[in-house]
Image 1: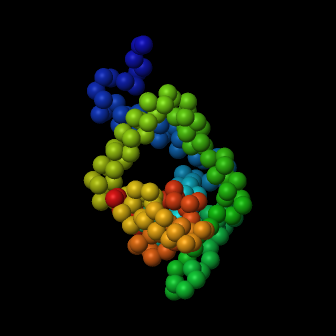
Image 2: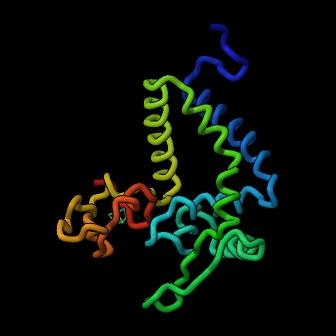
Image 3: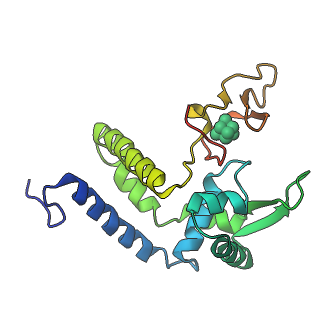
Length: 196
Ligand code: SF4
């Protein structure tokens, strides 16, 4: 198969160039639907965050952005009706961010979904290797930038599978937050995550 103009045969730089071009293409598509790229990032994060991570502080850590920038983004999302803010019960000055029905609907039309579909169409082995390789590249970039790695319960050191066998609705447990976890929550991303 002929090489495309994008591929020069030097894998590291090739990967970086492909990621740059993909990012540019996807960001260009993020100006539709009344949102900008920063607002899409906030919306997407809230669509994936667990109940310990749906706060402005956790979003700030995830994005590695400044508090002021994230605050402006959240204000815009709230003003446009994509998210709602409420007080976190029992925790002073802590806010819960939730997607509204309008936010959920916007996410269903996320321009990045088209990239996910293209990735899904790759062969199983290629897809699994790509996912693993990209995760390793991302972890390296996070380490270098001093940014926090977000992950989910199944490979977190604080997770105890079936830690609460007598609780049918939340049979698993989190040792960090001292809380029960429902099966539906396990694959959401978490600010407290630490690899096992
Ligand atoms: S087990 Fe880890 S990922 Fe799951 S809620 Fe607790 S800290 Fe977060």
